[in-house]
Image (cartoon, rainbow, N blue to C red; front, side):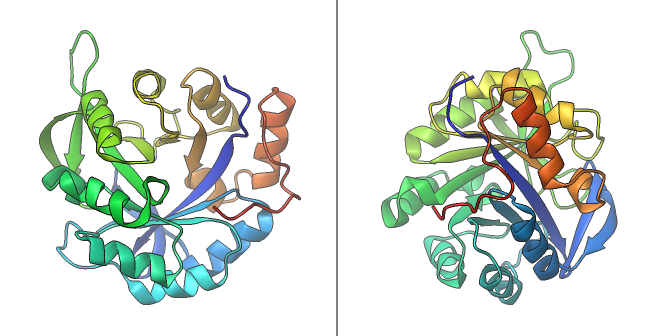
Length: 268
């Protein structure tokens, strides 16, 4: 584990203007108003916030600009926005609305040049590759398939393998990768540590662990065993199982370099 400060990032999955949380992207449960929750997480000491319009790509529409704008106005921490971004102009619209970074998943798979176009226009630090990966059953060594349109019914399989796609995306200019295990998402059984290790070991950009956090030890495992630079979580924070402060205190006690919850985050 390197000495760089690790980040805790709550994730707001937004559907029809409300934050929801499901299991493996299905059976969504209402978790609250995105603007109110964003403001709350900011005050709680989160390091960043991720906002995903989870059905935008599957429904073939743009992201909800008004919700993003209202959310960004309330925040003093960096905001990443994803869902339904298909062009450099879409990215520009989100960044002008107040996002610090934009996350692309389905559109990047369908048009990899969008990564380099975004990096050229705004800098690699603004371009996040969102990756939804599903383990290929029985594969040895382990392989994971990249899936798209994941807002409904588990999405669609692509022809890409997760580790290979991560390497290619960073070569194209992605400055960060959010690695979401679809097998683990919402299960609260822990992150896919093997997947995280494989991708973290293959790229030089920051890797964010996503999918499966159920307790504070899972966050610790993602950073130490999975080699992640940041941990993204939803259920454990949305439904008040743990606070951001509790998570940070736990990780600090384990020797993880982490910004105290009372210390303001710096904008990227």
